[in-house]
Image (cartoon, rainbow, N blue to C red; front, side, top):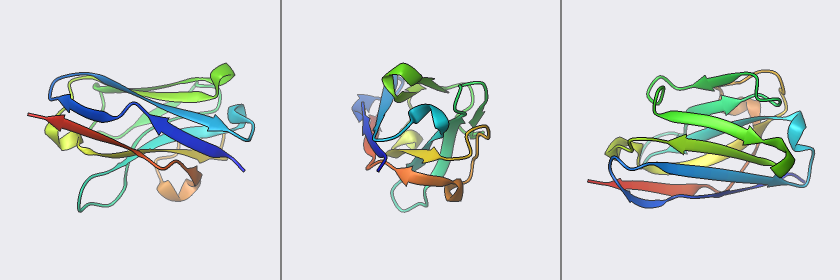
Length: 125
């Protein structure tokens, strides 16, 4: 059973940077596309970013382009989400997820099979 554990969230000042990590275990990490989603209070879970198995393709939500960068370290079985210039509207629980469509950076939550428990990010103004 593939397991995902997110870390790196917290309460930070608006304008600060943050790097979220998601460590995978229990399966072949390099076979999967990895994605980040977020769920703000009172809203549905929304796509943030995705990266294909080899890191060759990425996708971003329009709302985060230029401020968020997704990357992965396959030998460490870890995917990262670097966030610059945090805004109050970035407040959400951030989830990482696994898609078995290894060569497609899907933006659809329904393409993702395994999910982590999430990490809270709260930029304070």
